[in-house]
Length: 282
Image (cartoon, rainbow, N blue to C red; front, side, top):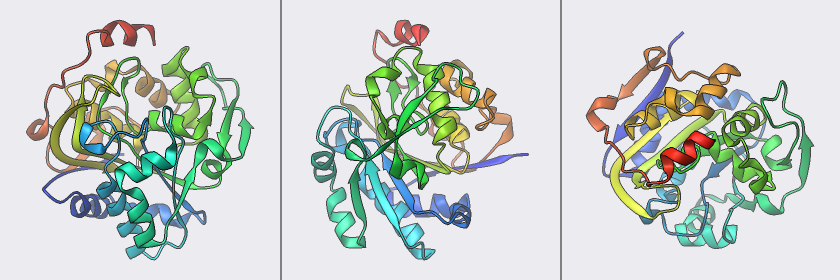
């Protein structure tokens, strides 16, 4: 069965986000009677123009789409790794959007945590996960950027912001990411490729792409995101493990691309010098 992933390019991040969600029928996740948790990537509190953090205009597009479909409770939640989460929200302009749409912002680092055991773990025997994430339908909204250890920092790796302690994940990171995603798998992934990041996850080397990538299979969305950066999905260990765990597909032949085609927007991202060595250790 083919899965759909939309790639949209345009000057208005909010509009192309809404259009991408329409194309992949994002409203299908509304069948689940849970709050929606929009999970951006605020690794730190740098502005989205640095290519590190999620663009608030993409978040606004996600919120606008689900408000249009009359979804009641929508929460934006993140647990920043290297800064104050609310400072990150403010620097990205998410606080203004939250006020505009009457959306609650939460710091997942200060949430109640539930100890959870992944089924058939590859490495992660137990993990403490924010209760708000466990109780919600998750929309992962990461930045389009490579990662020194994991290869790519996209929608399923983005779930690390919902667990504690984050540092415990880095030994056998790739297996741990797949195990974590098996517990809190996003129902929808929306990658912010408006101003993407080259180098690595926090290098602050922006690259304007004007893209949004979206779909209901987060593993497939990440595979497409990796491909757009010139990284083969079958070279990204945590995506391989996630596919083996039945969380989605990385096979581009099984993914129906809507909108822009990969080859029309693809660009070989420059990666940090240590990346290949560290990825080997992951």
